[in-house]
Amino acid sequence: MQNARTARKAASTMHRVMEYASKPQSGVTLQELLEFGSDITPAKLIHSAKFLHHEMPIRYAHRVKDLDTLPYGLCQMPSVQQVKQWYIHSMEELLAFPKVQTAADERRFTSMIESIKDRHNATLFTMARGVHELKMAMVAAERNGDLGITMADMIDLHSFLDGFYLSRIGIRMLMGQHIALHEKENGWVGSICEATSPAEVALAAVDTARHMCIRQYGDAPDVELHGDTNFTMPYVPSHLHHMLFEVMKNSMRAVVEFHGVDNALPAIKLIVADGDHNEDVSLKISDEGGGIPRSALPRIWSYMYTTANSQAFDSMIGDSMPMDFGGESPLAGLGYGLPISRLFARYFGGDLQIISMEGYGTDAYLHLRRVGDASEPLP
Ligand code: ADP
Ligand code: MG
Image (cartoon, rainbow, N blue to C red):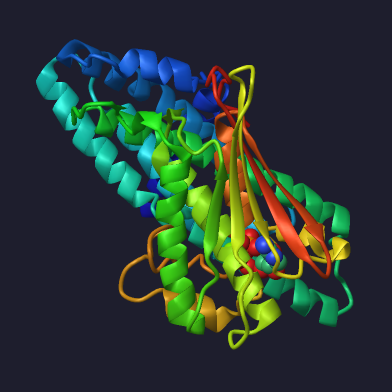
């Protein structure tokens, strides 16, 4: 009896997933978010809630469907099942919420959004664990001589995860923006700062990265700022901080390990360039940390080469699920720094590239799109 009911419930859930996954997702641009969010009124907040109420179940359903079609047994891994349950739970919660019509509805909707956002805090970490579980299963299979998974499969898996994580950035941006629109602050539209100064954000990222580097190695290289350090543009400072912080941490570590902490450390250069046509803003982080061999370059963008072992994953989970980001992020050292930073850049139409000269150093180019009229890439 109980089993029949559970099975019926699961079937109707999957039916809803398929229904909503067949609807198209609607992308937004940075420009649209800015225009919509300026001079926020209670009526606009209701409008924004209505948009999320419509859009989020569709995006969640798309992801559940994707997770279900994950190949190579990855969708069976316990961690991936866990992530899927979060997505289903959130989709169902949104669908069960009544139509948002009044300011009171909107407030209740916003607190639901806040709890949904928290529910998904550890998605990256949990997916990383799923990939690790898959790798363990593969190692066992290899021992038995039936590996059945090829390098091409791994590349597919990488594109899947790239799309999945990119979509996550989008959903969290929309939720975060709606929540932040409730706090009015001069010069800010939700989480977008109209006059974001790349140089200023870079300095803050440098500061945190240097602290971490000094704590770990006892010393850290200086960072010199060059180029157009005065200009500003509308952007999400937290995204920019994330990218610059990850790149900076890598450069500092490379410099210290290449030169040795007892020797003079060559400064890292950070160059800011504002394009003539009001189009691109580029930042270059240039280090003399010995570079990366070209043969290792594909690996730096991969989610599959984590060096962490099972114990590392277990020890990171205490009583509660960890957060993906933040000071003591459990993702540190899992090889997610560069690929996730590149997704943050691409989300608003930019990109991140790494050019290395083995034996000398590495240049990281971060391109941001200044006009902000690129629609979110929606996998
Ligand atoms: P993590 O730092 O967690 O290993 P990242 O994605 O940030 O993951 O970097 C992946 C790898 O790329 C690093 O482990 C390192 O081997 C290499 N790498 C990245 N940036 C640099 C750099 N500036 N100089 C030398 N190696 C680098
Ligand atoms: Mg890193």
